[in-house]
Length: 352
Image (cartoon, rainbow, N blue to C red; front, top):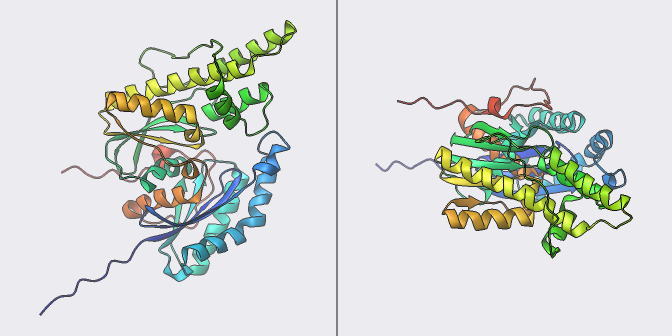
């Protein structure tokens, strides 16, 4: 008699992301195929304030959550009972914004009788790379998001070790503060990037390397150096060389990020370098990493811009890894604005 193989059912995860000012819901199949990824941005709302206002962000999440969930399911062509689990960003992020997503996810998990998967926001950014390429281990990730600048080593799937992090401003925060000092509206990073690549010359600015061999970062001093250049020009009655300052700032940031990332890859024997986070959409950084990795013969993965900024597809990708190794999360899970990436890691596989 022939034994028919049982058909393997796909893992369909509905994921919710509300860590800051984007309300996003996605349906992701087997951790790598995006069936839908709906994003409702609040940029226009917060631009009037020059930055994200946490209370306003939370209220906006509440207003659009139901509609975004419905759109994600409709676009994916998936009925709730076909889902394997419901995933949500547990942290880090703005506590009020996180709470909206967590409450929504818990409600859906209960109503649909589906497991809940609490997911780490930065793990999501890292696994956004799996939406575009197969990951090889060990690998190294350069995380450059609004509130995080880190070098994260993964020796095996879902196991994270931070080997370097910022000691003050994250690179995204530094871009926004420098942009404000140069007269650009929020969000300022794209304006600085554009002007930097158009500038004919760069105003000389310092590189902050810290101690020899350190993988940590510091951008507060560089931000202060930019302010000094702007203020000195104004005190002399001159208009600041905005384009030259933007280029000098970007070149300083990019040189340090690229050099430390390449050194981290070499020192850990990583097979790939991954780039992730909102600043991964920066054209200057992408171009510099591509050029350097080609010269060093290092495999580089960079997600498209839609997966660099906050989105739920990346949460679905990371949740799949957690589901495969650890299963779901208890329903008494709480939103955690200080959630540790290393603690979220899946259990380390025993070595025979």
